[in-house]
Amino acid sequence: MSTIWTPDLTAFSGPKYQRLVSAIEQGILQKVLTQGSKLPPQRRLADALGITIGTVTRAYALAEQRGYVEARVGDGTYVNASPVPEIGNVQLNMATCQQPLTDQISTLSDCLSQLAKDPTKLSQLLGYRASPLDQHQQVFNQWLNQRGIQQTPEQLIFTHGGQQAIFACLSAFLSTGDVLLHEQYSYPGVRICAKQLGVTSIGVPLTHEGVDLARFEALVQIHHPKLVYLTLNNQNPTCIQYSESQRQKLLELAEQYQFYIIEDDVNYCLPEEWHSPLWQLAKQLAIPRVIYISSLSKLFSGGLRQGFILVPEPLIAQVRLAIHSQCWMVSPLNIEIACQLIKKGQITADRDTIVRQRQRLCIAMGERLKLTQTWRGLNGWLQLPEDIKAHHLVTALAAKGILIRNGDDFNCHDNFIRLSLGGAENDTQFQHAIECIEATIHSLVQNAYSVV
Ligand SMILES: Cc1ncc(COP(=O)(O)O)c(C=O)c1O
Image (cartoon, rainbow, N blue to C red; front, side, top):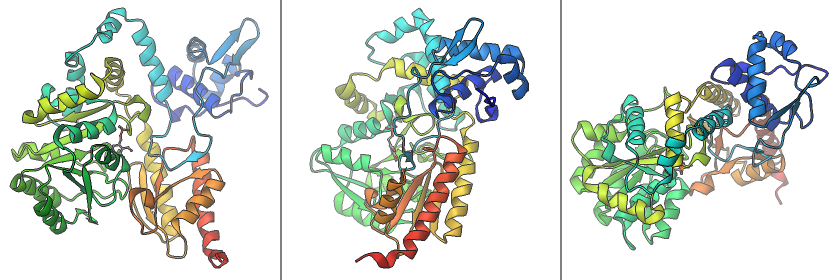
């Protein structure tokens, strides 16, 4: 390479040599390092980055071990791009709620390498098991306790993602013709589950602090639901967070009308945004009417498919049976990887900083455009002015390679869009997306008259 490739190691976590390997991976994914190109000589890169040559040697060796590069004796180190998976969609995806891809690949790679060297552990993971491994339950148990979510190991049931957790709960307790109440605008996956089971799903109107309680109670009185599905911490798509009084009242209603609340806490919040779950309040108030669902999908990556349910004791057997009927058991290999990530403290790594910064940029854009907007975690929910239709904006941006979500996808027909922050590969690409969205909104306002 003529100009020396100098990655920004502060964008990654872990020891310096690992950061450099992550930077090589990202360089390959983003095609900054193309197949066959030569990495900088080790000494020059060490000087440029202000690190020791030993660190660079170690990073290059690890990158070679992973198949990303090839060292040619007396010549140098060359990029061997093919083994690193391509990011599936070349378009800039702000439609899918996902974490920015930073060092997830190298972290996962380390976990897999470690596992590959441990035949005793591997043999434990290969058998059929009626119950999860004790050590896996302990890791999750401790991790959740640290987050202030108390449970016994028996109450913790692993699933393949939050989606299976929802389906398992619905199939365990509802039959054809039963009613499920959920928020009026909701994650479409819950409606898919209800439909599959012949369950009638009814949306409850939302206020800015959660479901409209008067309408909710009226619907409960009419339909006598056994289950209610709610997303209290970061409502998808509206980003509403339920107030304290709303949470208390919901628990009182659950006790009064004897229904269970499925609390879906899959959606990521920044640490300062997150609220202790209803599960915990239910425990404190001794009203065991909450089933808690979460996953690592929005903390680390969706492809891991690692989710879990916390279940009040009397319901454990039914939920376990539901999982058993769907997949016999959740892959212990998956759970082992999740446990390693948790033990290494690598679940969210340093991505909070990126998410926070991207949120700030988006909020500033929304303010410049004078849009009504709410942001939480990875998502933003924005209402467009009347003269721009959400579907026009979605189509215009798709033509420019930027995917965003139309509020219609969540059954909201009031001209909203949902933007998700994780899809951009780097800050420059993200900045470009924001500028493009802003410019497109301006041009749509100006061209509104052209609809004939
Ligand atoms: C509210 C909500 N619940 C559950 C899920 C599914 O989670 P998972 O990917 O862990 O299956 C999603 C995914 O977007 C979601 O938004």
